[in-house]
Image (cartoon, rainbow, N blue to C red; front, side, top):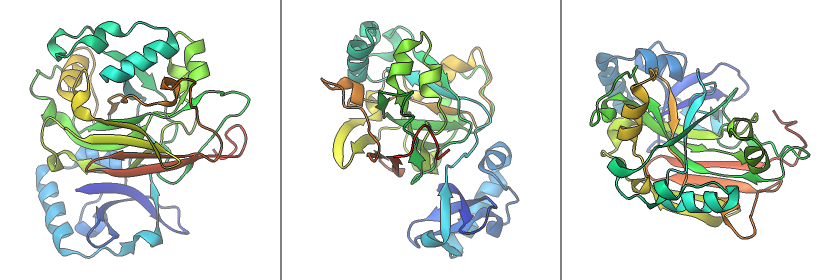
Amino acid sequence: MKLVTFREKGKQEQMVGIMKEDAHGILPIKKCGLPYSSMQELIENINPTEWEQLKREAAKQEPPYQMEDIVLLAPIPKPAQDIICLGVNYRAHAKEAEEFMHMEFDQAAEKSDNSQAIYPVYFSKRVNAATAAGQEIPNYSGLVDGLDYEVELAAIIGKDAKNVPKGSGKDYIFGYTIMNDMSARNLQTRHTQWYFGKSLDGFTPMGPCIVTADEFSWPVRLKIESYVNGELRQSSNTDHMIFDLDYVISDLSRGMTLKAGTIIAMGTPEGVGMGFQPPRFLHPGDVITCEIEGIGTLENRVSARQDGENQ
């Protein structure tokens, strides 16, 4: 099931709906008898009986909204907490990151077995408001001179997770979406921590939907790609991650509670702008298209306006 957050054109009320691709429309979950007004509320509260109700109603009802009638928002427009991100979690990307940032990632990159890898690189990304598909990304001229893209699979935790044993991570995943982990490389390399260079307003494009976990086999093995102005830049598979979701959920939950609605971005494959010689960073007007098999397409343009005026 593909779940979206949207509003009717000309109105401000946000709704949660089911994207019915066969009918090219959106069915609000309230039409199915569910009371939840936000994706976060849905994730935190929906129970198995309501899931079955939602599936039954979705199968028999026609969507009252067509895509041209609505404005699609990020699936979780304002995450309750910072996003948890994994750095250098694809082997080939670890190498290109090392060359650009002059940091040593060789040990993790060279290991082929999760059980023998050293340690994951975790960092957080502040998101005051996630950027929806179709919205512009600010260019921050004067502040950012190394604007970069990173297509990532993002997993959404479906229930509070604490001390999750290895092999049980699947039971805690609500669904998956696409995230573009926009990065200001000059800020990222200037600071010991990556927080500032990853967290500027508008730097978290996400969407277009959340696909529920039951739509995928486990572990997830999905084709993942990005394009800049139609040119293929990144092409890999989530099967090439160094640390998979099961490992990450178990590892993190040993020391922290992963609350329902927590977003975990699982890292990006090789082919980002900093990986080219010379680097191929983004410019105003560039269009970044991120695609993940089974989820869809997330496309955004870099704004020509100055210093985040569009935020």
